[in-house]
Image (cartoon, rainbow, N blue to C red; front, side, top):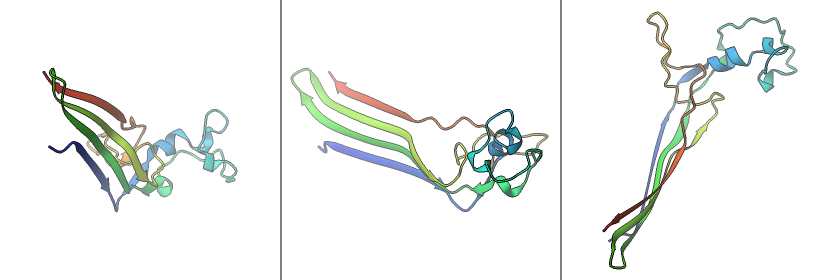
Length: 141
């Protein structure tokens, strides 16, 4: 019987662009007097009267590689007379993402369609993908 088990799953996407509408509408330079702005806008001499408008400024590479699942487990086998096939396992989901995308998550999956025009590929304040770690113990009596 094999005692150790290890499995990993990655997913990714390459060669596409995403529109970071969160950065465009939440962190623009015209927020300077009342709210937070993006750090890279400080000292760039942009006028604070610039309107929030759609442009290619917030179009970014959407390339990413994500460690979606990883599991490691160990089977102890029979322990004593009561515990049969004891197994200990640790699983993690959404452990890390490799990307240059500056938004929350390059795996944009929020559809906020307006008047039948879909919004896929446009990020606007989505919930970031949750990271979870689970420990499990399996035993037969």
